[in-house]
Image 1 (cartoon, rainbow, N blue to C red):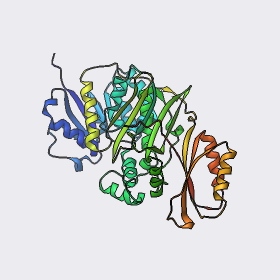
Image 2: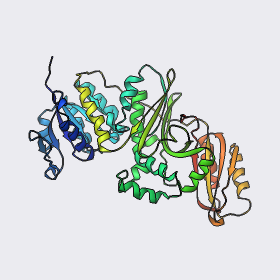
Image 3: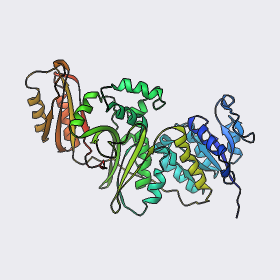
Image 4: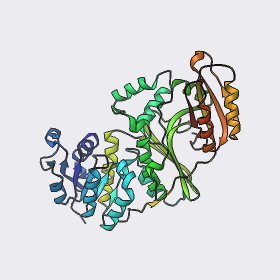
Length: 423
């Protein structure tokens, strides 16, 4: 039986919002399923474009928009406020919501999911993680029969572009970042990307989907990629590895180990071969083993595809897709090997002092690497250590850092040799 198309109100007409409208307007075959009725934006007059049908109402009055009772509100404004208040109002009146807002979901996902259930409507957010990659649907639907153990991913396109570009030569992070901004991969202030907040919020959403548990973003350790330099890639290459910003959440006993930050991954692994702004996520299950999802993780068109896909799924009139995310705690990681990089003002006894500090914490050395050709006052070298507890390693590095021979602070990176699957 033919039904009326869903009326859609679009909140935000920036890069993603404009791409959503473009897809809907350029695909007339969708007209019997979804119909764009409203576009909301601040200072909306400057946003008007002539390719949007005249039947669409442009407005900066959120109250009037919500009072018109659209079937679906698409929120692509971003941020926690005021977007969160508008999403709550929409769900509270029984209007379905499609959002790309990972920060809002990370902060208030359980509350919003509960609100959708109580008002017999739906909250969809495929676009909140990995852009156009159908990750949430794949995990929620395609892997529902498995007991999931671990989710590991490269979730931030900006950081992956920067690190993959640096791995090919002697370019500094500052030089690569200039190019990333020129190409539209990086914001003027890339802090949320390079310091791990963006990937951390996405990891909270992934934990909700994979494990039905809600981790607090503040509890997830997040480490910046800013200290990574060209020598780190040369040393990583000698170890058969490269460096990527990795986000990981893993079930451990009654809690979950989670972190975001730069890590060594095998050069020939799916993660090591993931280049430019692409995202990749590997999900490990008890029965089905590992499954990987990859594709364009950033950009208006890719993210808009996920938004429109959510809209089309709502036309199936399904009401059983929302789930509850229960509170969960973050616990210590398993023992794993680490890469330690030091830049020192060279003198006798440095290596013996470092080795003694590590031994005092029960940490065994695996290898010592020193490339020739560096000046003696800023001499980089690397020590890799056998699998050890993170707390012991942190304590040792903090003790070593108090010595007066450092030209730069020591850098410790986990070596994810098992978590990143080889091709």
